Image 1 (cartoon, rainbow, N blue to C red):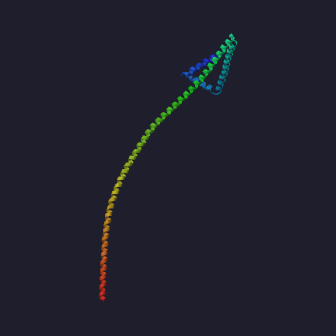
Image 2 (cartoon, rainbow, N blue to C red; image 1 turned 90 degrees about the vertical axis):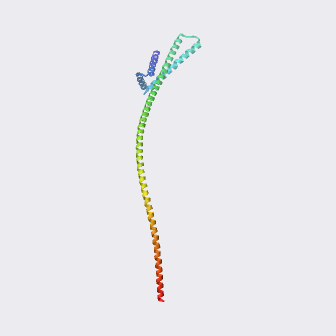
Length: 222
């Protein structure tokens, strides 16, 4: 029993040393522990750990029982000394083996977590690099698009300026023609007034002639 526990403790110490340093053996050890933790491995490990805990408890109980008997009797029996040393050694070896097994489990867990974190960090770095490259390409394309839009707007502004100049010329021509038409209409109005006056004069002269003719006729009749 003691020889088996010594072998177990030495093997666990070797596994811990392998897990602590980055060597090619560490990958093999991690793969082996991963396989152990799959399927029925955890059940077997828990069963062995439970059995060792029960044996550890029984050894501790035996040690305490021997000490109590020594206190009650006041005598030290050589057989009890041998049994006590044996139980103490077994309890110490089993406790050390359980503690080293727990250390191996925790080291394996933290190494896996560290690998996952490194992979996630590498993925984040790749994404940030790709986003930066995409942003740089996008900014250059946006600058080109903006330059094209500026050139088109400048061309449109030039066309609008030309159209405004032509409209101004047309407005000036229309104003000149309107002034000419106004003057012509004023002349037509003056001519119309003059013709109205002549018409009235002709009417008045015709009325006076009719009155004279009718008066001369009346005189001849008398």
